Length: 129
Image 1 (cartoon, rainbow, N blue to C red):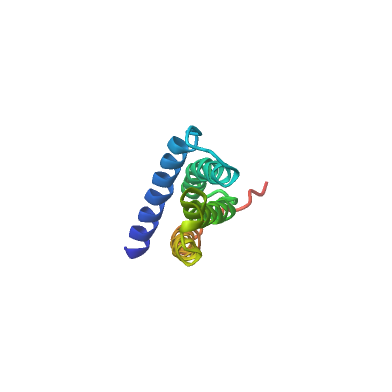
Image 2: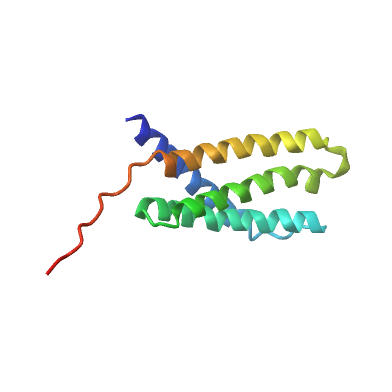
């Protein structure tokens, strides 16, 4: 039961971040410098990766593990860079790194709930004639 709850929660978070990333990733109107462009591109990337990774997990594609891991790396990168990119040098580096670490832990939990915690699909017996 708890495996199902963890997996459904993780899939909802993947889809939610995917939807938010797709919505906000196309808004380049507030981008004024290179770090902001990197963050906005990362937001668009985790939008695409979140939707595709959720689909891959549900369909049990072999690439699901890599897609969820790439999504987690991208979300962590955005969460680490965004405070400094938009807040400038006034944002403490420790705060930006702490936000990145917290995001990395959440991304690992989502990866674990969707990939490591799932029983594999029943293997298909080879057809012999």
